[in-house]
Amino acid sequence: MSSAETALRIALVGNPNCGKTALFNLLTGSRQKVANYAGVTVERKQGRYVAPSGRVVDLLDLPGAYSLDAASPDEAITRDVCLGIAAGETRPDLLVCVADATNLRLHLRFVLEVRRLGVPVVLALNMMDAAARRGIRIDIAALERELGIPVIETVAVRRAGARALIERIDGPLPALPDAGPADLDLHAEVRRLLAATVRMPTRTAATDDAIDRVALHPVWGLVLLGVLMFLIFQSVFSWAEPLMDAIENGIKALGAFSVAALPEGPLRSLLADGVFAGIGSVLVFLPQILILFLFILALEESGYLPRAAFLLDRLMFKAGLSGRSFIPLLSSFACAIPGIMATRSIQDPRDRLATIMVAPLMTCSARLPVYTLLIAAFIPQRTVAGVFNLQGIVLFALYVAGIVSALAVAFVIKRLRRDRSEHALLLELPSYRWPHPRDLAIGLWERAWIFLKRVGGIILALTVLLWFLSSFPAPPDGATGPAIDYSFAGRIGRALEVVFAPVGFNWQICIALIPGLAAREVAVSALGTVYALSGSDDTIAAELGPLIAGQWPLATALSLLVWYIFAPQCLSTLAVIRRETNSWRNVWIAAGYLFALAYAASFVTYQVTRMLTS
Image (cartoon, rainbow, N blue to C red; front, side, top):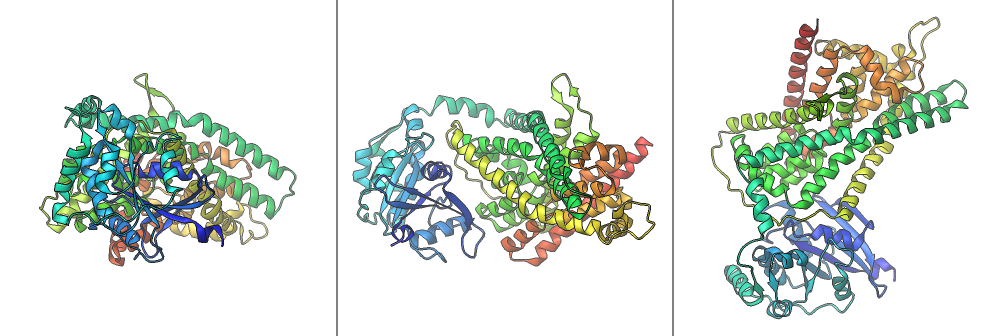
């Protein structure tokens, strides 16, 4: 038998914010893969490790769920996998139910539901160190006796925090637990278990209370959130600059070395003007993307994000959304695709659709290369008030513009659907905790790998295709202009320039917008390729910013910045809207209103800036 045939299949289940994914990362390390469940867009995370006995364990991290009485696609997947009825999935041999030891009043109800599934169950009491610090005392032996299942203490943020769990998994499977009480008795059973096995402190943790007095304050809480976001975008420019310079110099040196020995011809042009000018102009933005993700992951791990959702609930409701939309929209800062998929946690279908429709307005990481290229080229690098980076302030303003636009569109959607009903927001506020470096490192590695795969896959392919379109057919005999003027791409760009001239776009920008439909960051590599073929400089990857600064008026640069706040430049996002809403109508509505907003906003920006600078 192969190891895959004899592997023990285990699923981690639990409420959101119980530390389940941190435990999964601890057990599997980098030996994990992410995909989607068959037929649905819910993310599937699976890993493998070898137990001390040599036994192979396949570990599945199921979506967080508050109940097996599913109210969202995520909870439905968890229920179906546990019951063995999910398409393409075999039923787990063992369920490890992860519960936050600091919040057993909420988590034990789900444990009681899992106990009735007819599958061997182990309860992993996670965050036991935090529970001890808060003065919570849990009688493990008594809880194990009352539940009739093994109860194991874990601390997922410590290297040896899962040793006892690994040893228990490596042993014989536990006996099937009793079904327990009927649904009408679950809350009463939780109260009985808490009374019999848990001693709570006389008051909640002083640290959490002290922080929440500021973090959840209706005024100071919003100020704190604004300051945090402002500092994040300042850091994106300030911290990344040395790393970006190093990457830029490395690409420049590698490009010069690679083409030095090659004679003039198509191969040299492909490497210099296609690969290095295109791919190199995108790779330099990797440090900024990783810094942005570092902060997002840290805020998520710390327990702050649910509080931000709670804080913004009233504001978002007035705009036609709910506080539960906050986390999907925040995820859209990374990429609108997982943000749209995260709306599955929104139970009200009208709120979910509104969130999906405005998610593309969040400034995703793919826009970052375009923003930073234009900001670095046209915004002076100087200090404001002796502290703040002017370029960081402009980047922050672009992100704020995306957020304000999303709220405005959601407000219009709310008025059009004539919905005045209120939808209560119920959120668990987990204890504050320090993000663990291992989880941050894994998250950053996953994001870097995704970015590099895009660079080596779709961006490289589109860059080579654009190089071909920009190089052929060859110019006729006696031609005096650059070869690109006579190419397929040059002709397309000149034709589109008629449409986009009122917003200030030249033919080079028009060419870059086309491959940008596949991925926004391709627009930067496309500009690098187009300008490389318009001149004779083999180091255009490092010189693109100064080059466009010398050739474009400020009005064109600002118009393009505004265009990218709104434009529906990513076909993958539109495809996900189609899958999540099962409607082509919603796709056309989203694409139509985003294009209209982009063109109108760019037109106003270009015309006003041109009048002010003339």
